[in-house]
Length: 466
Image 1 (tube, rainbow, N blue to C red):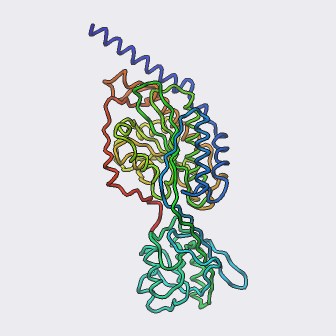
Image 2 (cartoon, rainbow, N blue to C red):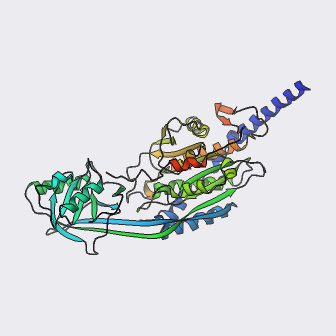
Image 3 (tube, one colour):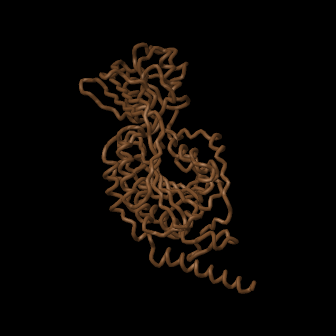
């Protein structure tokens, strides 16, 4: 009897390997992925500036669109609403000479607004903005020009306030603009940012004793608002199925947000479309997270609101963020040496498909709250995007091949995992299939610790403070 059972188990294992191999490789599901679909989605959600700022009208329109598309694929869709503070800041700097010169400027979050006409005054160079830099200069009633470095943007601005300045221009200490600068808290006077090139040009004029006047404008919208997670569920016929979460944030900063994160959002929609026609052994939750850009608010809300049984039922989480631009696919966990079978598996699929990749660590996206409680994660992001968090983050810069690559990895990986039933071969932790791709079998019960969320501050580190 023992030998018969053993032979039966071996036969079952062979059948399973053949099934996974045939599903995964003889007729790859990834052949159904359409870059045209993804491009058309981008035309809907990333076709204007300030396209999907959290808590404002653009994000709501995108939420409705995502909801509509997921329902079209036959998924059960729900919306998780949560309160937040919506902010939209803008800035400009014009040199008021005989011919107006518009400089390359960006805003700082938490800067107070100027009057609608702006503030016009003489510019005075104030070094790095240290208290000592203001001792021998007169900035009363003037605009202080300060170089980035050594001190936080808030400290520089408040030092200018104490010296009597009525506005501050902080310019970059490198080429290009200061992206996603924040004062952290509201200052007493408006502050805007300039590119390193424009800042150096202004300083040269001041060094030559030229009197330079400028008009700076800072505008902001700040209001109590709400954001939403859009959750589409593809249910398995298996009553004991565990859940794989595939996520991407759909909000953006004050840009068109084509790559960040229109690319992840449209990839999520296309993966949902392709997998919706499959019979899978796992439930798949496709979650478009709101309010990532202001502190991973949506993903933390989702994890925090799960019951312990719902939390324990999650097998893994795959996150797609900025997968449309760059030449190297980053495969991330939050911590560098985190043990994550799904990140390891992502790496193997990328290698097999001939996709250039690197393994690294980052907490800068919506996988972080999941890993914080112990859930295995894999965060996919292409690098580098020189237009990150700028108005040049537009559709024409999206590399459709990158979208195809990311979708191929995720759809093939999820389909292969889901076609290996963890209930049938409980004594195996990993199952090798064709080409040495390894599929982890979920042979143990999870016991994730939600209290670990309280140990983390999910303030988005992409905002630059100094």
